[in-house]
Image 1 (tube, helix red, strand yellow):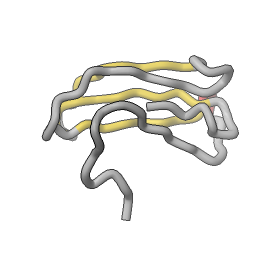
Image 2: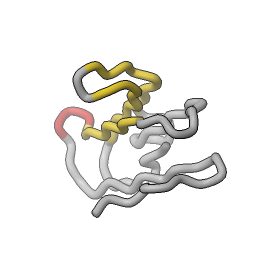
Image 3: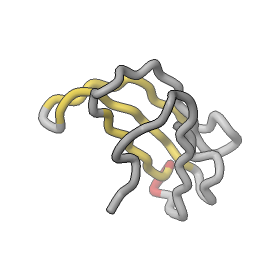
Image 4: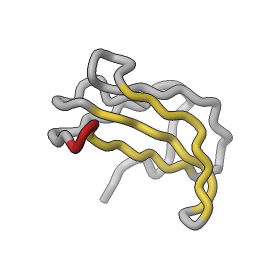
Length: 78
């Protein structure tokens, strides 16, 4: 997961578990200049949560790129 095409300084963190009990899998700040990238081995049919924030309260347009795998169902927000 990466935010490299975003137009502000991002921080990204990937979690597993439930909303009541999240476990951090990977976290990054500034892997691609001021934007972020995390890499993880994921398990099919598991739910993951991705948190993207702005470093120091920065805001802007978030562009998330997901790479790898065979394809993902339910990968678009309504």
